[in-house]
Image (cartoon, rainbow, N blue to C red; front, side, top):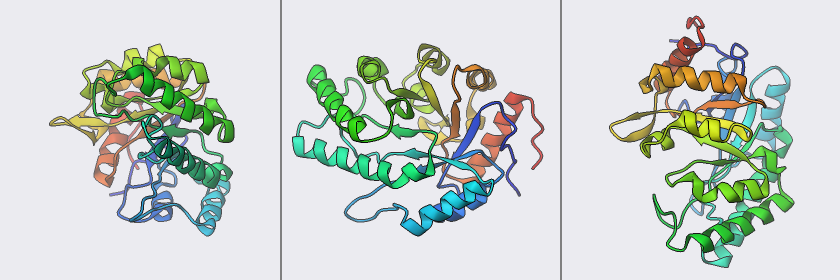
Amino acid sequence: MPLPRLAGRLPYRLGATSYIIPADILPNVRHLDGVVDDVSLILFESADANNLPDPGTLRTLAGLHRAGGPGYSVHLPLDCPFGDPDPEQRRNACARALKVWRLTAGLAPHAWVLHLPGEQRGDPPARDLAAWRERSAATLAAFLAQGPPPEQVAIETLDYDFAEVAELVERHDTAVCIDVGHLLLRGEDPLAACARWIDRLLVVHLHGIVDGRDHHSAAHLDPDLLAGLHAICRDAPRPVLCTLEVFAEDHLRSSLAALAVAAGLETSP
């Protein structure tokens, strides 16, 4: 069954991830052409494996966009602990983030999404919050001094209270990525979070919760929440990317259908 084609039909930028079908980045981008406006390139690099695109793949990605295909956003590697107590780990984290930025800058992404992981899961993100914040701030400053403009770096809400990094976001003048699923798992209101950060809102990650686990179809979300998020993305003071952060075609299909209903659109492919 074809996916609903919503590219260009919403009053904001609609995205999906580069892992919808079990294939590499290029087949996923081609598969999503006409379906969404943006493909979030989920990139990683480790000692065992990496999916960083080679120069030929990057040229093809750029050519697909020039030919009318989707644009791009970039999710910087998840394992970049900017606040790690070990200075060498912080330097490596900054270097990995900068490597991905340099690799993808030619694609003119809408945003680079960045995690600021805690030293531990949940609240609090570190035993010594002040020290962790300052280490994170210093590494972020080093990244921004050599990397993308701060207004294109969207700091994502994770599994801790985002108030812990609010001062850091404002000090460095970055953007914000509101992750709906992460906030719901914490029992927070995503609409209130969007309102709090509306002047810095650049990306929304949209996915549902099933049995306490995130990254399921957005069809599992309350229709009133979807309608509210649609209105926020539509009316935000700067262009917002709403990425359906799911990783399977059936989850994307039902997410697209639910979002189309929230927007009052027909859902036929």
